[in-house]
Amino acid sequence: MPFTPNRKFKQSPRLIVAGEGLHYDLADGRRVLDAIAGLWCVNAGHRNPRVSAAMKAQIDVLDYASNFQIGHPAAFKLAQRLAQMAPAGMDHVFFTNSGSESVDTALKIAVAYHRARGDAGRYRLIGRERSYHGVGFGGISVGGIGRQRSTFGPLLNGVDHLPHTLDLARNAFSRGEPPHGIDKADALEALVSLHDASTIAAVIVEPVAGSTGVLPPPRGYLKRLREICDKHGILLIFDEVITGFGRVGRNFASDLFGVTPDLITTAKGLTNGAVPMGAVLMRGAVHDAFMQGNVSAVELSHGYTYSGHPLACAAAMATLDAYTEDGLIARAAELSPYFEDGLHSLRGLPGVIDVRNVGLLAGIELQGWASGPGTHAQAVAQHCLDESGVLVRSVGDTIALSPPFTLERRHIDQIIDSLRAAIAQTAQATDTAA
Ligand code: PMP
Image 1 (cartoon, helix red, strand yellow):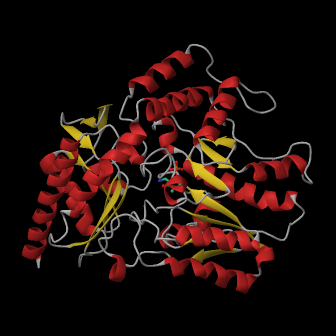
Image 2 (cartoon, rainbow, N blue to C red):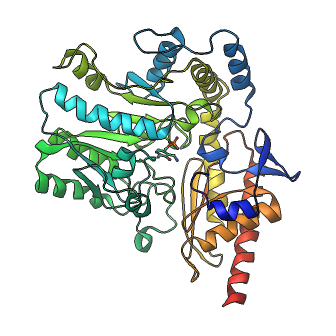
């Protein structure tokens, strides 16, 4: 099983047998509130009626069509729809099947873009510490999680990392963008001095780092990265696999923070998690380099058997309808101050050392425990599930929350109450153990 202590799982398997709206039914008969929207993906609620209906209709018309040298209209329609939804100027799309594929695709496009323009010396890729960009060799190379990198090295050549932006000493309990840390972006200038801009192809960051603990960007940080990239002809990639499609209360985090990158990677919320699909969005100028540049008849030698799969296109189109026509992204934005107030009411509980949030995305950082990193957060997550039927996720020492946008205030109350009780209970157990 992926990212799972398999041996432990075998002893006490937890199985989900059904889902509807905000809830999962477990094999033991319990109905639980899914406060993480699957794996940050079921933004419009489980078995969203629009999505289910569209998939059922599609399967009776066209099951599969390749997009190699022949296409089908739904993929082009979806690409157009995405371009309309994306920040201005991001008007071309390449389809993948996952976040990992989107990341590796974007990195490859970035390198190939420079070559198409006759600038083949630009091969270096710059990621950031404490970032997660999926599990491809490209993704783990630019990714900033030591354990995932060391297990599989050697990785891609010519990769560097910016420092991460978490600063508990100065920024704990900030609401939204923390005030301190814009200067962390200047590390990019240092890398440019070290390697020379003429060797650097792209920088990739998650606008809000997700799986490494939910880290919103310091105020002004993304804008400064954009300025430095522009100055040196470096492409900027935002990995919006989590933050895309309304999670932060706007279509994309790029909209919220007012910074448009050159490429955006997406997946997850694109199809509401109902079927695998990812997409890389790019600026017209990136696309045009391939059409006009020094490339062969096949402009981009890259793609997947299931790129733009008809079933995924149908699911995505219906999902985007749910986000826009049912007003779900607006709803995420409306609910976010209430969510924020609830979360910050946990401040002062034993072991709670930070609360971070943007839109309907949040992390509650818990004091590390003597028995190892993450133990405290895991215990809290377990209590939430067992005592009050709320499914949250522990990532390291952080409890991560990303509920479906269809929730109501009473569900937010339920999540916060569940956490309050679980944190108190865990603290008590820790005291007793000590
Ligand atoms: N990038 C980010 C920011 C992610 O959060 C994830 C998945 N959590 C990925 C990439 C990889 O996506 P997938 O698991 O669909 O390959």
